[in-house]
Image: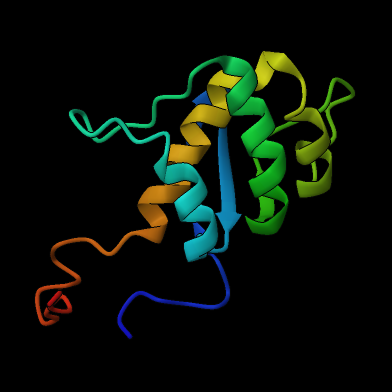
Length: 126
């Protein structure tokens, strides 16, 4: 099973608004990867949403299922933000750049890397 875990995956820190924010997430299920696949830019391999509003709406549908823990993000009073508080805050348009980066990191964490798949063969399609 290599790197697969049911305990969640800690993503590389994302720099945003002067903070280095970490997220512990579950890997995406096929159904949500399919939702996100319509936003894949086939030429660049990057996510390409039609508008920032689409990013926010899609995040509200997907993030609650996967974000388990947030670290390094603080509220105005200096206290640490919980995962639940982040999910509420991420509805704010201000966080669109962070949400976009988090989608990219979540997809990366959910995808088998070439080095991890070296002993596996893809299924044949007849």
